[in-house]
Length: 333
Ligand SMILES: NC(=O)c1ccc[n+]([C@@H]2O[C@H](COP(=O)([O-])OP(=O)(O)OC[C@H]3O[C@@H](n4cnc5c(N)ncnc54)[C@H](OP(=O)(O)O)[C@@H]3O)[C@@H](O)[C@H]2O)c1
Image 1 (tube, rainbow, N blue to C red):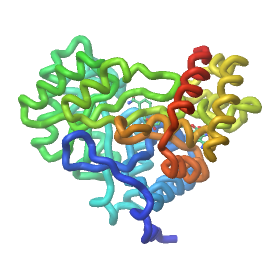
Image 2 (cartoon, rainbow, N blue to C red; image 1 turned 180 degrees about the vertical axis):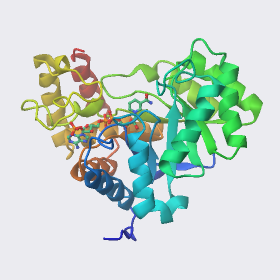
Image 3 (cartoon, helix red, strand yellow; image 1 turned 45 degrees about the vertical axis):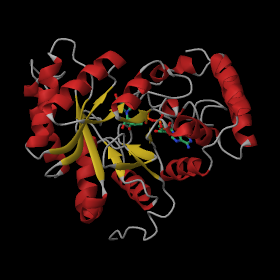
Image 4 (cartoon, helix red, strand yellow; image 1 turned 30 degrees about the vertical axis):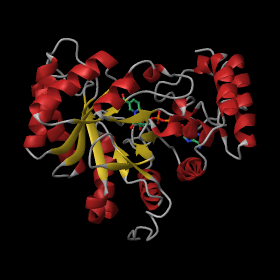
């Protein structure tokens, strides 16, 4: 059946300005790292993307290597654009990245201009797009001069293949250098994509300060710790979970007795706030407005519907924050 977007899709989702740019992003965005590959059911992937869009999630995050196999998530997204979402292209904010291994030989990964430019060309073909809204350097390359990596980002913008550029998982010093080079080139860094959830708070030690000072936005990946910060594992390991499927980077050791007790405590606290654990974990990432958007993953439509409701309550009392800190400090990874 042909898809018609929900007429009310912009009524409840809040959009936040990304740093000091002209762009706004939904406070919750959808990433296609897992569950959108060639091994997954296309109808489920399509249903998740379309439901997300109907709920006001107009930012979809991809990378060259998402699948499996690598490249398949971009192909899936391309199929959905062709069948359903293409007519809404100007309402969408589509990102992709390059940095991890894609093809054999010396030009198939990291941060050379050779790799980044070729990879974006391949991504555009897979998605059937003329341009992406945002292109990222997926990881810092210690061997390539940062000037070269950043000049590749500048080049693809000048070529019209990307509108904005970003960096992912760069540390605070690397970030400051990258931002300075991009400013010098005249293509400012729009956004940083770091790892952040209530058990992993590294970005609070310097990175967020750099981003605030430089006017760069942030979009936090794995805000649910790949599903750990939900009620999913509280009663064992479901056979259809990411952990059971051995997908992503979630490890069985993380579901240990200590962490389960912490998660139970967090779930009680969440219930007191009228939220599920997943909703409270997302609200925690977005609290205070320092993080522009929380970049979730999903394996089914109902998770997206549950997660978006986190936005109904983003405020925390100092007592709630202290209780979360005390519980999180006990977790063992
Ligand atoms: N820049 C980078 O290097 C980098 C690295 C990793 C990820 N990312 C980006 O971040 C995105 C999100 O990463 P992520 O998928 O790890 O994020 P996440 O939101 O921490 O975890 C998503 C997973 O948690 C489970 N889940 C989600 N909502 C749930 C709910 N309400 N109840 C129960 N379980 C729920 C699902 O797993 P089940 O399959 O178990 O149901 C889902 O696939 C990726 O798609 C990608 O775009 C970027």
